[in-house]
Picture 1 (cartoon, rainbow, N blue to C red):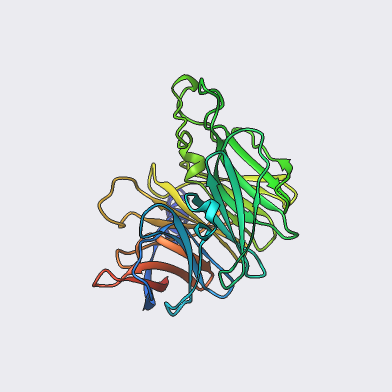
Picture 2: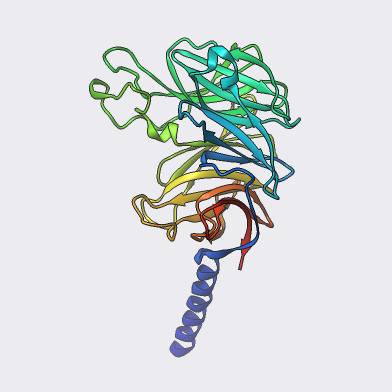
Length: 336
């Protein structure tokens, strides 16, 4: 009888280990299709994707004074460029983020001194207007999401007063299309800056967890707000700004930092990068259930694909990478 139970135990352990390996062993992503971009340019995070598979990203202007946003088709063709710097009063501004609306319009989150603007573009890149946000305290804007109905969700961190008080404090709010504050959103145990108030850096980077965080709009209409901490913390909120749940997504490698957040088919794809590594060999993408945060599958990227992931579907991913001549490419990848 004792031998029977020992055999049963070994069988159960064997099944458990096999299942664990199936779940936690990263699948290798393999490039299935690649096209050169029609423009040789550097990529500035974040990268985003629309429902047609077009990829959008920021790039630095030739004089390195500002950023613009470009849209590329899956075949590498440049379709549009969105230039808020063409507005004379915004020529020295910084595009901190952008968002693609359901109707194809693009909105840029633009920062100039103490002022923050949302600039509206047509799908083809024509400027259609700008709106200044009404904020009570000086703010470093970080992320932008265009919501259904014309509202906007904006995150950032406070500049703080002269003594450094409140410097880096998280800020999350919904604004209407006139720039008026509709509702401020707060999260318990949100990412506070690591520096003490008396020594807080007021140059705009007091809270890296906010500035390097990411947001995404899910197919369910909910907002997913990720802080750049390890493990990744994702706040799920309704379009009205009500906190629904908080997800904590563990990286496969200790201290790996989340650098990208993508949504699709009721799942979240979080890309983790290990700081100070010479290549992308430790860059992994963990896909979890968007409701529970439970792990679904893990992927490992390659040097060819790089780290600049833009799109996620159940069929695979889209990256902005480079070919053997280091020319930028748009590449499709799926698991092997």
